[in-house]
Image (cartoon, rainbow, N blue to C red; front, top):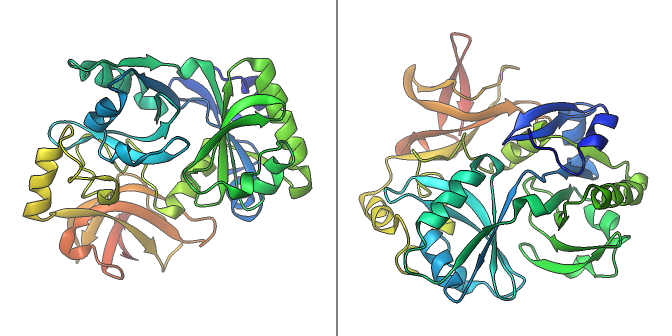
Length: 354
C-alpha cells in the first residue's frame, strides 16, 4: 500500500487505517458522526492525497480535453475549474473528474481507484493530436479543508484574499509558507478549499500542523473517509463505483448539466444524443426513510408496491437528519420528488420517499 505525507500523523492520532485506491487511508479518527458534525458546524481537514493529478500539455491540449470530457472546456479561462466526466463510446462513465485550466496546460484530477485506468484511457485516445499526458500524482500532497470556518482558518496562513475566490476557481500562492495551488471546490456541500503542494513528508507535516494550529479556536478536527462519504451523500454527490460507473450514463445519473452535447463531438456523444432523444428510462434519485430507524445500504433492493424497481447505490444514516438516506436508479415515472417507494431492509418493505 502506498502512503501519503500524512500517514505517520494519522497513526499518531490513532486513526483507523484501511486500504483505499491502493493507499493506506484513515477511515475515521474520533468517529464518523462526530467528524461529520464537525464539518457541518465548524471545520475539518481531510487527507485526500490519494486523488490522481494528470497533466495535459501540448498545442492540442484543449482539443484533447474536449475529445475526452463531456463538459465544454473551451469555456474555461485560466484559474477556472470545471466538474466533468469521461465516457466510453457506449455512453458509460469512465470517471468523473475536475478540469483545472492552468496557464498553458490542463490538470485533470481523477478518482484514486481509477487512476491507472484513467491514465491508460487518456493515452489510448491521443490519436494524431500533439499532446503529452503526464501522470504527476506521486508529486502532490492534497489536503481539503471544509466547513463554515474553513475560510477563517486558512486566511490566517496566507496573504492571498481567499474570500474573493468564487466557487470552482483556484489560485497559485503561498500558504503556511509553502507554494501551492489553492482551489475552492469541495465534496461536502460546505464552503471549502483544497491545497495541492509538493509531496515531501516534511512539507506535509508543516502544512498539517499550521492548519491544525490555525483552526484550533474553531475546534478543527481531522476527518476520515467515512465522514467524507456521509457528507457527500447528504448533498447527493455521486461516488464513482457506487452511483456511477461504466454501466450508467451521465444523463440518467443527473449529470446532464455537465454533458454539453452541443459543443461538438466527444467520446460517447453520439450515443448520449440518441439516449436524450429517446427519453430516459431510469434516473438516479435521492430518497429519505422517514419512519423507522432502519437505514439503507449499498445493494439493498428498491421496490414499488412490493415489486423490485432498482437497487440502492449509496445509503447511510444521515447524522444531520438522523434518518436513513440513500440514492438509487428508479424508473423515470417514479423519479418525481415525494414519490413513495420502498427499501427492502431485513425482509421488510420500509417506506421511503424520493
